[in-house]
Image (tube, rainbow, N blue to C red; front, side, top):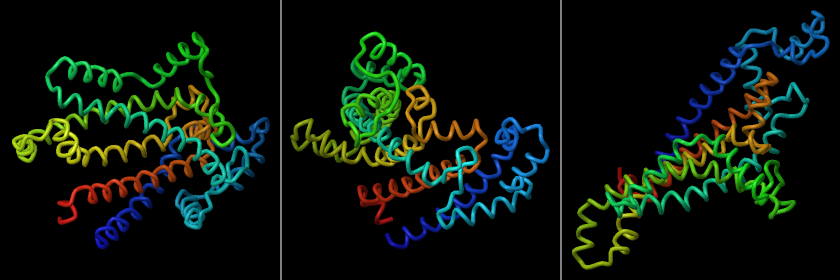
Length: 315
């Protein structure tokens, strides 16, 4: 186990290094000149543009810019935002709790809906309930988040007046109002993940229910709910654990459209504003932190799979 963990950590470091260069290089393909945006009314003055490019090292070769940025990142310094002159690390730390709260609520909704629906669909295979659950899951996967978000705002905020249409209140300031401002975007994100979890849970349960150990449990006279819960579900959850961890990472990465629709000041809104303003340090910092979250959660998913499945530990 320890050797396997060290080998995985050794794979993560080169992956992050390659990703960091890809993040840095791909930004150079973005149209527009950051110096022109930052110059404002003085964009027509060549001296001002040259001074901005020199200050931000935009006049240096790409590799020199990259290694200068990488050296600062390795000591935890993501630089300053070109637009608002604040440390990128401070911006990330201020947005991360918002995205973490939204992602956690969304994932909880997905678990509560997706896994029970997948189990019931597998147990009632080829019955009307199975068809109905699959139809709802297909609708959840196919429905764009921005459309569902707009419909929920129109119904619950405009028509019924139950919930605020947008905005965000931190959890530590007012828990009730914070829940009110995040429940709709969390539901929008959670239903999409729930549909994915449902379909994978159903497929894993169908495989588990056809195994010999399940037939043996039934032959012993165990109640069907005991067979499903103790024998089939425990083994079916192994691939679902891996998928769920990755989906949680995707939620933490920030849902760009959903956060824009509901004006949630999380990772998604931060990176969109940074892209429009050509604020390269912010884009680089957010994307690199997101990549780090993904690879860390992928490692956690593998560890959980090994803990749940003794055969993987033996291998």
